[in-house]
Amino acid sequence: MIAIAGATLLDGSGGPPKPNAVVVVRDDRIEEVAWGSGARFPKDAVLIDAPGMTLMPGLIDCHDHLAHFGHDLATRWGINEPQSLRGARVYSVLKQTLETGFTTVRDAAGLDAGFREAVDSGLMPGPRLQVALNFITPTGGQADRTSPSGHSPSLVPQPDLPLGIADGPSAMRAKVREMVRAGADVIKTAVTGWGRPTRGLGPKDLIMTRAELDALVDEAHVMGRKVMCHVLGGPGLRMAVEAGVDSIEHGSYLNEDPDLLPMMARKGIWLIPTFSVFVHHAARGTPHESARAKDFREHHVSSLKLALKAGVKVAAGSDAGAWVHGNNAHELSCLVESGMTPLDAITAATGDAAQCLGMADAGTIAPGKKADLILARGNPLQDVTILERGRAVEFVMKDGRVFLDRRGAKPSP
Ligand SMILES: [Zn+2]
Image: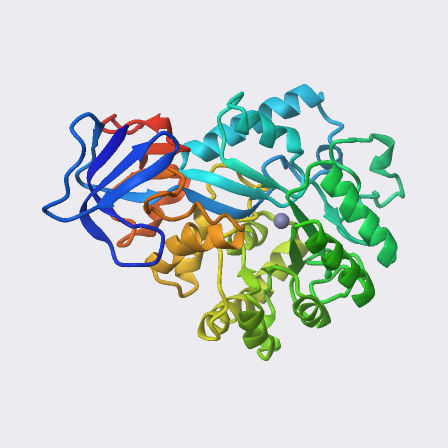
């Protein structure tokens, strides 16, 4: 039994901070939560004394790409290095992500289910994983990785990451089943392009029919999987909301169709804006990507503000894996910059994120919940950026197991 005592508690529910908290952990679960001057802990508990620190649920990133390492063709196709070396890179990213305070990550394409099994069985350290394996889209969409010269990565098959191309409703159903067979926890699709200069793949270009999306959503739901849907703007937004996907990923131009927001709120469709990735596009993308990202920044921020006003639930997802690993908390800073309070941004990455992922027993600190806990030095409600790159994170527990404890250690120069 472990007792963490003396920290200020942010329990992930969105409630106010509670000073001088005591949280008792037995095995993999939280057993007791108390705070204030009368809070006591059992005498036989191993004490973790944490004055001056903030105790929070482990952070959750609802949209990342943990196995992406670059944008050039050879890297994207996975032909520039042995698979074992690629696997070792992923191992190091998973460890780093956990040690920066993220105890759960939903991978939105690129990571195979073996990593989830390896983490769950204790073979390697890492956040708890939900994996999508690959996008499912028609020919020419994000799932189609054919090169500009017409060469196809199907020449280098990766059976644990099925190719996601499907045309027509019945092929969509078969593809969902294939992803589930290969271990997908969630189904990832895209109904618009994003920032490619390629004709037909712009942020408002529709790349799928309603009948195809209906079939995909229905089949995923029959198989108990949520649908995360990449969509930026234009008619695809209405199609995704009407078809009943579970989350709108990006949603940058929602402000141009504000009548969709009350519909999203009513249907319980989440918005995962992923501001973080567009900061990278603006700073480091191709000239076209950079211009595009700067172009829709205003729409994106206004979309978030209108969504919050309409009562749409918002969850944190960085989508930054393709650019940088280990700074998933950058998204919290982005959410605050875009108008959320630090408390709401933290809730979007804890209690609300767990709801978005369908994890009823994670994301908040309450008796019976998973013991996913972090301690941060200082007060992220005053400055949420202290969480970036895990700078302030000195202690990480997942499922009751301690993965990082550098309390009192001198920060590295
Ligand atoms: Zn993504």
